[in-house]
Image (cartoon, rainbow, N blue to C red; front, side, top):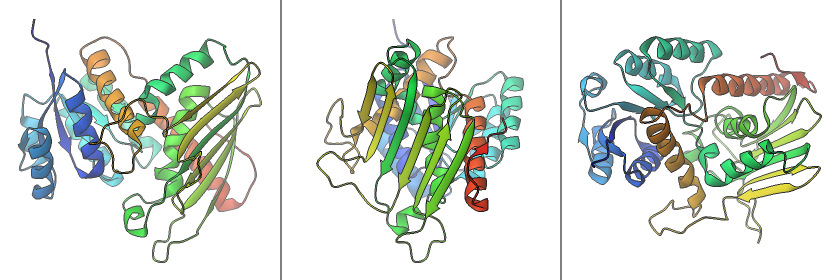
Length: 326
């Protein structure tokens, strides 16, 4: 019996397009139907590598009946417009993080997705790795006892040229830390934050940020992100999670890869790719072809943005702990 496959199309390319393309190729029930990018040469390169056609316009992509799932991989400012058009065309949507610039925009996506009876899933790729899912099961089962502390570190050097693609570290990269915390521990009560400027000469954005959150039971979550330096030590905290409870703890690092693939990401962290593969497999196999809900929802995206906005307020005002207004 032949498996039914779900046809996907990309809007936007770049390095994240590479990761989504590899994820689709790893999943036997997914196929790339085509790609649209304002730079046709970039779209052609992705299509040549992963399959599918090059669309001349977004409208042409959305009119293709073979496309069931649209991957929104463009810069943040265009997410809302593209996702709304895709939902109106009857497509499911996988939208890169951060989902939108404002809370109201995400709420609009919720309403339109419900009206269209289509799934709009945030690409919270970090939580779709096997190790994070195992950590989630252990925490929920009470194996760690009462959670006392959570740490997530990100120390990967980004040159000024590369960092210019991302914007604010606090808003566009710490969002990974925040949704990971939400997935594993739930909503924090209070938030405070700091950011710093170490090595950029032209960019007027921070290259380091730290968020501290207090959970309802008193546990403290520490979220750290730095574009300023790699960690060259023998036990690097390039990307690392640590959760400690009264009965035990979990430590997970991207340096502890489940497999090695010499075609993988150039920075040598194959676990990064696992998250993309996991989110595509989960959305296609369990949600679109199955009847399960996603691990990452637009409600999660709203909570994550509220926490980041609260952290931004704490930085701007120099205040201590700020209560999150959910």
